[in-house]
Image 1 (cartoon, rainbow, N blue to C red):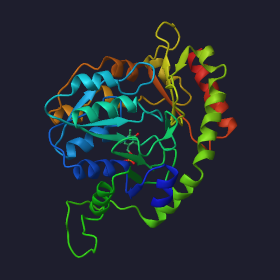
Image 2 (image 1 turned 60 degrees about the vertical axis):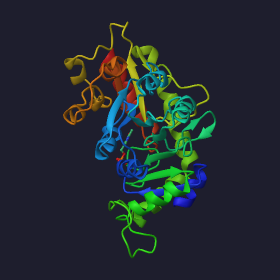
Image 3 (image 1 turned 135 degrees about the vertical axis):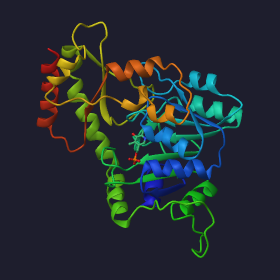
Length: 328
Ligand SMILES: *Cc1c(COP(=O)(O)O)cnc(C)c1O
């Protein structure tokens, strides 16, 4: 499964692990970092938790208004003498400006990692994700494009790094298994899960096409009739929609998310990344708090609706109708 996934993702090495979170924890440890890591505030808690598990201080950078991906200029402004690495995040399928972030890291001698949990099959400037940073980590958990029921995948073109993560996922055992060489976890993927993940990677194009078709159906007539706007794509990107990420049009009187309005939802919408705007776990660990206006805006006005590849047309229509009804 690792070899096939690596070939499909256009990268030399893939190491399958028990989850994206464990993959991120092992990867940051394998990179042997100290000090601070800069990461987006608009992400799932795992990205920052992986830093905390490695005694690295997370420094949160705000996101762009229309793509919800991290702002490269803000990352640049946050780089300081303590910065050891930058973690990019693929946001619901869309990569941030990876070229700008990679260039920044190269110029300052920083490691560049991507939490690509949501990005299986996503393309940036025509290139498929897998080798867009020193290493990327994908999630194979149930809500992602490719699932192994549970699992994760660390991808890199760096043979040494792949080798260390491979040892670390298996208690840090040496290659011959007779010694313990690295600080490890028990974070292997089982054969059973790997087979399911492999089936997903083999069907990647089909899975992406189905998501794109669902997006087309929901876009037609929906945004116009509800006052919602879909998030923007980035030029040259082809990305799977992990969820339908919308925001209320703040100039429209409709779509104000009041408690009573949300009670009327036939399908209760998820708050996007509830941890993003209130990083209690991070504050408790001493992460500095900075103003993150776009993240707070996105968290308050954003709306995440489910999308999955085996969603049939009738279900898509039902979701669309529920949204229209709730906002009329
Ligand atoms: C889903 C997700 C994770 C966690 O993935 P697991 O495989 O469940 O550990 C991490 N980061 C982001 C951005 C995610 O969306």
